[in-house]
Length: 125
Image 1 (cartoon, rainbow, N blue to C red):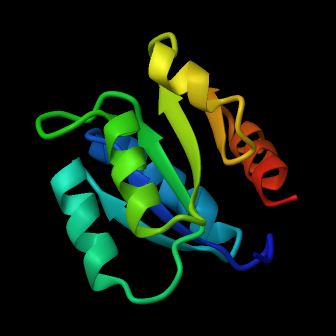
Image 2: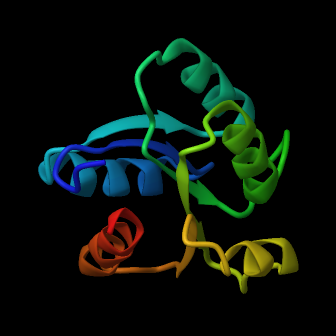
């Protein structure tokens, strides 16, 4: 996984956050797939044949499943995927347990683009 050419699946129910994060990632040369809920994210993943390197997912993405449930499903389909959980709330126990792995990180909202880039670099090392 090259740090300068990554594909992201970005999932957040807030369209303005989706646009903002996508703009940052695309400006850095990355490909970004965007979904506003888990059902849409799963369809995008199914339709996208190439690798998806990093899932950036809000912890709370109504109405179908939580961010951690989506990450669990994505790891079954794409075992190599890395995860960055984002949230304006404190992290839940499920996410906290996953953070012991090298494949998951947490980023509290609001965050600066530099903080997002730092988390990405940490994941792809």
